[in-house]
Image 1 (cartoon, one colour):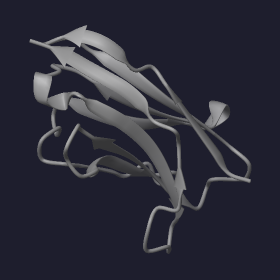
Image 2 (cartoon, one colour; image 1 turned 60 degrees about the vertical axis):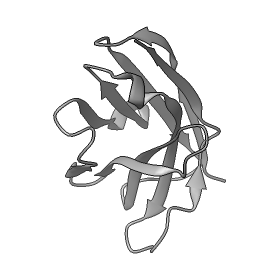
Image 3 (cartoon, helix red, strand yellow; image 1 turned 180 degrees about the vertical axis):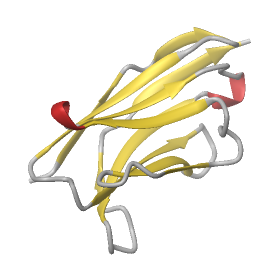
Length: 119
């Protein structure tokens, strides 16, 4: 079955950087769209970024555009989220997710990794 395993979270000062990784396994992902979502305490889960595995075309939430970069390393079956210029409001649990290209919803989720940005 599909497994998504996130890593790379931690504590960082405002203005710093982190890189999250999502190791994907269980099938061929060439027809998948992969995304990163986050959920802060007391808030709903929100979209951060997504990328087409085949084309590499990415999209971003307005709140992170220009600071975050999503990418795929095909040889490692890994999706990355490079986060720069981090702000305290970026503090959240970050989740990796995947869905088949034509699926309406993301149906595969990782367990999440905590990112904490101190001011």
